[in-house]
Image: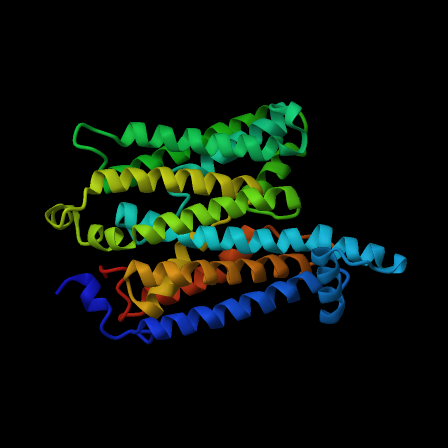
Length: 359
């Protein structure tokens, strides 16, 4: 009995109707959480006030002059931040599924291919060396995106052989080059004469949405939609590839071509998300496993719920990072680790969970 069939026989959400119901419930929870996250913070607003400001902003309605400051906080500061948290969480959840399918490794996440380390090199070059200064507030995001793409290209070129790109070779190359990129980042920060460069780079490296703005939302949303649509169209191919290259080839699936497309998709998608949020660990690693625990390993079901779970998770993580130690903000990576480590350890100790097919 193959892994997919074996693991799909005793899941709580066995039918498409159950999965659609679960998606609807998660969607409602996400909307309610989004409104609550916009309302809460150093200055809190009631749900009715928040909805009044959001309605006025969306419909072009008017507000009283006395409410202008509160309106600015809700619409110009918190709304883009919370939306970006939901978008990045959803994207990392999807990309975690894609990465684990691509390398057939349950411990893989979007950053295992050196994307995070490459982006950190670009970010540290901006902070320490002042590169891309002409791009102003977009310099950090642009450098991080280009660094992520350059790192991904280097990993793929180094991992490629005459026989294509084997999953294990890809993982090992990504891990090794990630160490190299991290060393390069440390060197750039080390030679920087300003003392605050290391702190700035470290905070970005652990993830932050403190600089979220409306201008970043369309780009991140477009990346999320592209990733979701592409993965949705290839969900059946991912199921076949999970059975092994030999079985997939006999079923007519070209694993090398599919793996290359997954690699490009993961590199571009992760680069776009990292550019606006920094490197946020654990979301892409934990969310796919949590979803598989409920719906089983079939990718169409996992891809339906993973973005909703990821979005819900990161909206609450961002909210907690803002309110736990005011007026300071905790890096998002700290909060995801605090939650993700015990969850993942719990999954490891569950004998019934197969981590996508292998114990």
